[in-house]
Length: 255
Image (cartoon, rainbow, N blue to C red):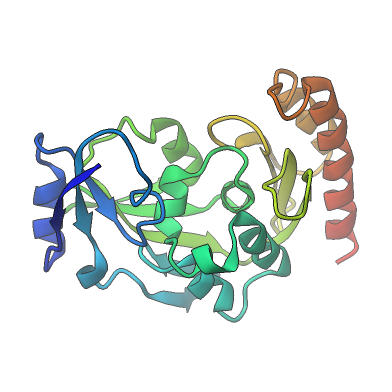
């Protein structure tokens, strides 16, 4: 339940508001999560005026401002085809027009195809704490700390590499559902290969990060040895993860 609304004029003011102990304060970009009827009482800090919505290509990276929406990212020219597909499968078009990229990372669970893709690509985040000292962190290192770090820290930018070949395959009960098994593979020109799995758990799973592609099927199966819930058994997810990983790798090899 929202009990207070603030719209700061600058980053410093926003960080000070988020650092308050009472009321508990959350940053708000698109509001698709905070506008739900959550039971706890909290304040929202609207980030609209902080100019964090740009999307620019810099060398081998796309730098995405925290408050850029998923649809704005989807409309950006030069994105890999499979990333566009992951954005389309994340949420509906209407919600993509409101949901921000940073907000999606903060609230998404392991079934999110978009965050699974970003994990495979070794995406980085720029964050800013109350001391206004910028910090860059790998998404894979940030995910396990999500919800436990200093609440005054803001994601300001998401840095996505585009000098990689990517492929993503998934299985869902219906085309409108998020996947129950999702495999994303990214490969660099050096041969480095990262495999991320979605469809289960609180966050996506990094199954492999190695100097070459050998072993992706086994790594994918092993990573989901305990991935059982109401949607699917661990045995089914293991079998499908291995199959989808092989399919992704074949697509990468054919490019």
